[in-house]
Image 1 (cartoon, rainbow, N blue to C red):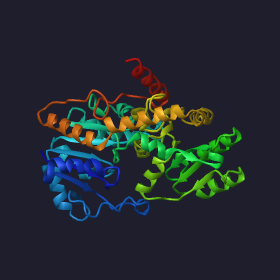
Image 2: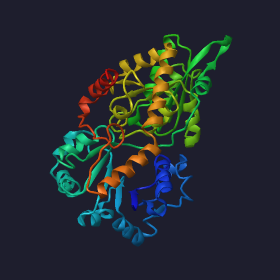
Image 3: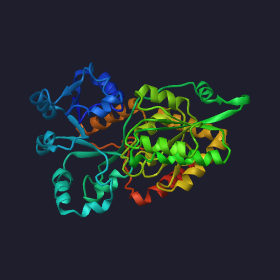
Length: 404
């Protein structure tokens, strides 16, 4: 079987699964990158791994051969590319295509009323409802968006991003997380990591630090990243008298971010609905952090089960967010239980090796004319979750899991 992935560019969130596919398929696997990586992401360390990848093809340097490869492959996974011309010839030829997509309407499903937008969605998606085209949903609300335009009925599947998953001795890992302050007293280490952008609401971390300090909690907050809000956040930290408990570390290479996660007790994930997936959640869970995350983030309803492997607050509700963080700071046993279960979720199900295995199994079925979804997890049938119902879904999912 010849399988090709086409995306705007490869990064460290995609390389582990692609490496596994290459190990399985050898020269029958290729990853086509359609554009150079953005300079900002190169500065963040995302581009350092790609120069010697044997299966990587660059469309912007070898367009003719890449176009031929897209047509000749048995299976093509296409996603992350706004320009449809790369995949249109294959779609029009009626060949198997597996599309991978984040949300169509992250800014609100009301945008689906646009006649011009509907026409474009029909041309790109709806007209292929009965064709051998399948959708991998990069996030919990993707299926709902595509249902609005009547695309891929019965052919939408759970998917996401699969950064590297590390195997740890959990006892040793939790010892690394234990920090002692003055007089031998321990303190809780809290981490926020990402770009300092409005959609990611890093100010929640600073505000909760002020709340915890007023409550007399012994803690340290590490802020890893940078961006437009960096200066306002630093001013806010100074104004609230938090400079002794909050540290800013700037942008760090991915491996250094993982080190901070390995040493953190609690990870804060505070983005709103504009966060299509959020691979830092995978990484924090793999690092056995106790995660507090908003339900509107695409990855959250797929990866987290409230009260079992993380805590999910209603996006936009700071009071609930702060209450969960305070609860974790006071309860070491809960932190360890949530972190342990989060780690196991990554090790057992949401990891690049398992994803590659499932994708190959699914693709082999398609070549036989069969659609064989998984029972749960990656490549299981994606539930149609309206964003407004995401909080309830995430909490109900936990109750159903616990009652089995």
